[in-house]
Length: 250
Ligand code: ADP
Ligand code: MG
Image 1 (spheres, helix red, strand yellow):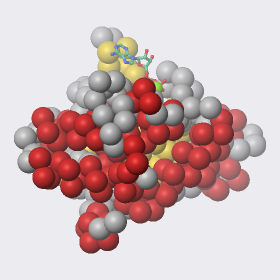
Image 2 (spheres, rainbow, N blue to C red):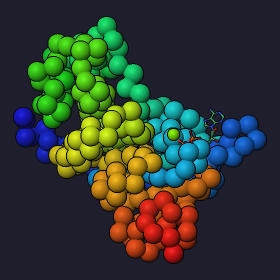
Image 3 (cartoon, rainbow, N blue to C red):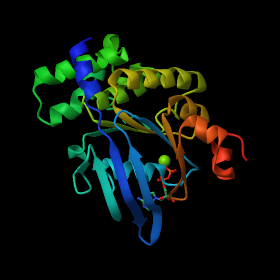
């Protein structure tokens, strides 16, 4: 593993700010006046009931949806009008959406290749990501020849090769069986420790939230209900809704 590259990455910690962000689909407002500050390098977990707006909020940060009002700042820069590809962000989805006819290496390098990077650079980045994710022995396989956990690692590898400032994960483990979820959870914690990037992670799994997060954001009907460290939310929830999600209700 090239330690120098690791160190460079650790120094690239971009914070993220949402300023009064709202989003409506037609007449329905699904994100309402969300203010949030995330420090560079923080691991932030979004939790909340199905339909409360977790995925929409990630998509607004990534630029896959346009805000109706408000601003998105990444590393101090207003990116509200920027294209997704110019935001320094990579997103990992619940469904890995790998190309079945391509090898692991081709899947991981495809985005860089399309972006016009040289063959040497693509190979180098894929090699580094494979090191981090222990996928070296699988680079020539196709997705059909991999386990669920390995496929999810390839999906994460595809994000790593882009060397993003911020990783967004939308329920990345919910398609895996219970045992594998634990392994991958540990893997993701390790990844965060190693890369040091800012990570935002959506889950409805309480254990994932409690073990991964520096900071948990509890969402309810498009609003932030409470933000705090796992222990704060567990020991001192603001209300029964938060208590019901994270700890014991007051
Ligand atoms: P979560 O990820 O927390 O389950 P979502 O962000 O997917 O919630 O959805 C929040 C709300 O926004 C839901 O009521 C959903 O139906 C609605 N919604 C999401 N995407 C769209 C869309 N493209 N068009 C219309 N409504 C949408
Ligand atoms: Mg969702």
